[in-house]
Length: 173
Image (tube, rainbow, N blue to C red):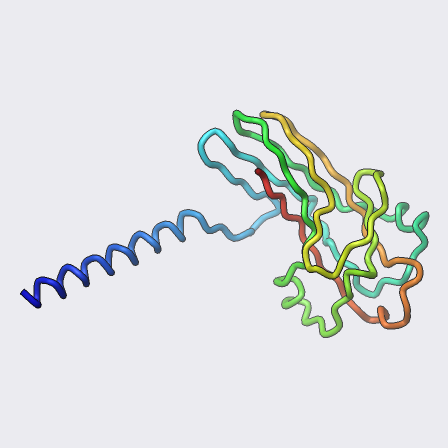
């Protein structure tokens, strides 16, 4: 009777691990390109980035008029599903790029200003993630975005030699 319980328990643990492993493999994805695709049911989207770098390295403080004249980082979001969706665009630190760079001095996000699509100029916070836009996108709709980032004009000498590496994350709800 004791062997039967051990066998059943072992079988349950093995099946649980198998299900977890398959689920993890199915739902995890690593970004190997500038296009990422997500799909579930009638809802799917594609995020396409321009392949440029979203970073501030060896930068110097700029006025807002100089900052909005810099080259933008462009990306697009396409809703390839059958239903409309709400979204948030988040600018977050790219830990992988920071590790690859070997950066030792990371720029405090409180010193970074941004402008998305010619809209209001915003100041990032040091919370690590920043919602820079939100809205809705219809089924089969594509939206293009242009993001500019720069060091705020009144940044002190502490920003010299610092780096910021960012990435875009789009959250649908």
